[in-house]
Length: 204
Image 1 (spheres, rainbow, N blue to C red):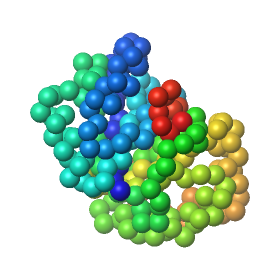
Image 2 (cartoon, rainbow, N blue to C red; image 1 turned 90 degrees about the vertical axis):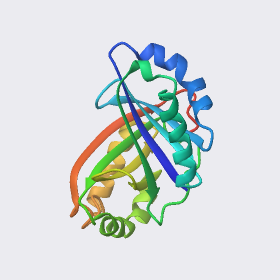
Image 3 (cartoon, rainbow, N blue to C red; image 1 turned 60 degrees about the vertical axis):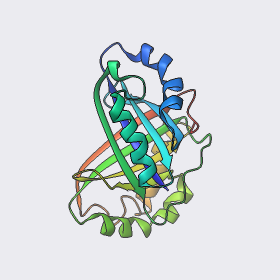
Image 4 (spheres, helix red, strand yellow; image 1 turned 90 degrees about the horizontal axis):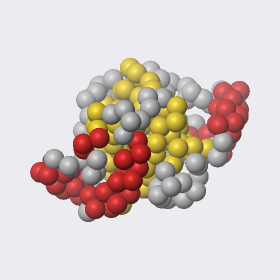
């Protein structure tokens, strides 16, 4: 399974218009994949939506992408956009397929830049501690881009409350498993944003 991860950056004062259009526009645009999540940014750069779509393979993802490029329409909201970032990502080998469900409503999405050739070593370091970290709080996925330069690593953490997030991170830090020992060696940038699931998001 591969995942299309997209960030839609809206121009100011466009949020209301986009919220009306986006549910139906996504359903009309996604032909080969399945919508997993749509989230609005609560803390971070505002007026952004994150969209997560599952595809069986890269050919299916590229098919939807080609259709979008042909029409020039971006999920039905191109006229409202100030920025648009899209990448295809492959989950780390030890992560199961994402299953939709009510894990949030808060989703922390962390995006890291990874130095050339460093993704596998980063994955290996994470793999040593992810099982225990998962016992503290759910890791929805951790994945690496296959079509972005520099390589991006994205991990998504759902929480019921902001307080739950803080408590989980504090416990993992006390145990010495987080950040993963050796897991930062090849990172060149780090960004964290807190999103909230939209009313129509299968990941809620």
